[in-house]
Image 1 (cartoon, rainbow, N blue to C red):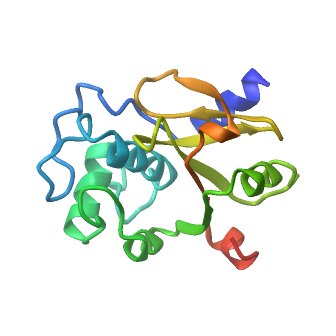
Image 2: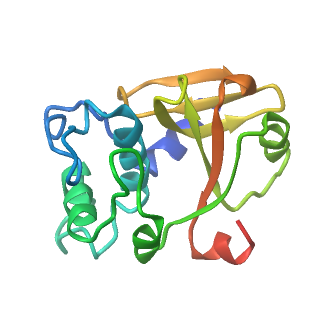
Length: 177
């Protein structure tokens, strides 16, 4: 299970939002930095991890792009929706789609019963202050990774999740995220 979690997280290139490399980088046109704005910074880390090899963002010789590159691309392309959100129409240009979202804990836990989901699940946690990537889902609890630190994976009861959203690519979008 630990190896599977490591592979899922590694496939995202999730980075510590407060890394010295970009902690003080201004997010878009807001007056906050990646490290100061946990809500948007954590969402940026998840999206950035998903699109970190996208040729629209990365230089051709780069193995993957860091949060600075993703932030710069989003800023230039109107990818931010104020200080608390992303413009998902712009994100779709990168091949990443936001699907169904819910605040219903019963519905969230039912998603855990789906074997081949074809999408990732992101959740709003810690009283709405941060977004996380679900690594494991069970009917009673969820294990979530978030970018406040390199190694934070938290086991949370579904009642501690404020909102859950499906996040996928073109293939999963065709399956009706």
